[in-house]
Image 1: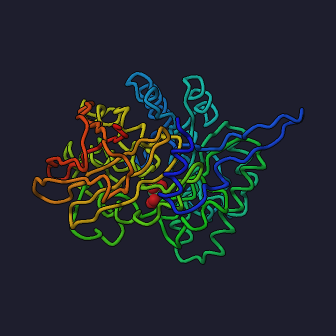
Image 2 (image 1 turned 90 degrees about the vertical axis):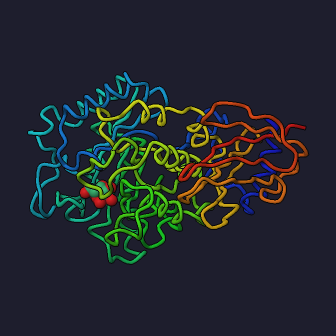
Image 3 (image 1 turned 45 degrees about the vertical axis):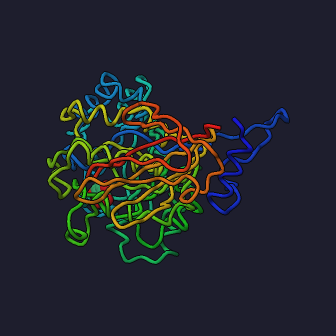
Length: 422
Ligand code: GLA
């Protein structure tokens, strides 16, 4: 590629210089220059136990999930993290009164056994804790034991830590939050093991503004998602539906990038209203596809929240759409911006590493709509002719002059890649 071409667009796109966090050069012991690998260089992809299983997890569920990720092709599509969320700990109650140990009734062979199992299958294992005395579900947290806990996670071979402060530190100031997340981030670094660090604070205290500075690789931009595309209002004052979450991320593009991602929360595809932890009655296949398309173009981590046993063929086809996943894992690592907001008809777009652009034509309304993408007026592209490809039809649609028009179903997002057609 025309890298300079891409750089030009990024500069135009972001209005800022490319982040120094994108990987500076270091010198190794032989004096050779190299770029150290950034942790979570692209948004983490995988699975998380909470939204379907809650704390009713055990060794068998994790092993079956790892096996299922392999046999279903999800691992090969990029979903490599299997993240154990809250509920692996033996004790409920304050850390001051209990040690942090795994529950041997649920995990008879321990967490290291599972990490080894995941690694043998080409996958990675995640674990969960929090900076409080207790976690969100009331289990012992890491307060006061950050160094020892980080060392223990590293000795188990853990690759990802979700560190959740939203229940213990709901009212905490930014100063306190920076301290508690910073402490665990440093403890992980001191452990010597590369562990992706998810600073989970439900999108409070503008965590996107300072998450990167305390070493977080991802942070939630909102409270828990609901298994619903568009439920009226912000249900129960806590749960966000898909559209709430998309709205929440508008304007936060500049905070997301290689190694530090705005996290729109776990995917709801495949829950079909059966989550015992989330509210919501499920979404249609079109809505799940739109949700997946938007999370991808917005460069959110892609963590499946459903039981893999319950995925339909349509769910799997959605989750394994390589052309959509490519937008998420693109080497430029940009979060799409909203360029057009015409009521319920909205256009999101971002440049890609090969000089093309990804575009989402999102129809949030209850009716089919005709949507027009004006290449020059909407995106300020310099191309005189534009080639358009549809990523759900897997089809090149031809070459267009000033604009491209499409019929977009209710709650559908038409996903396009456009490039110069000369
Ligand atoms: C919070 C988080 C969830 C989950 C639970 C576990 O609610 O937002 O994603 O981790 O805690 O208790």
